[in-house]
Image (cartoon, rainbow, N blue to C red; front, side):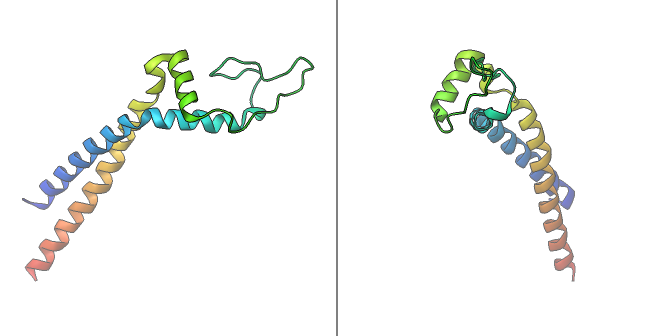
Length: 124
């Protein structure tokens, strides 16, 4: 197999594997992102986008967020109840697309360069 063919096979293999992994792990990333945003609730607007709860108390003062009060399972259940399965996979297609490009480019260039250098070394 030539250098170009080796690089092309590596590009496709890494892209497919990476995009599959990105798609499968998207719900974990969604939950992690929601939990990270939950910590900064004190800096956000009046209404939490996920739960719809008001962030201001009756006196107009900001409520203090209870950091660490919700577990990943609770956040995941809330997303599932509010937005459904589609909410858990929000952004999955974008992640998979970027992973195809990133992994494919990285592994394709790496394997192509490795194969090329091996050919050069054998020719010496």
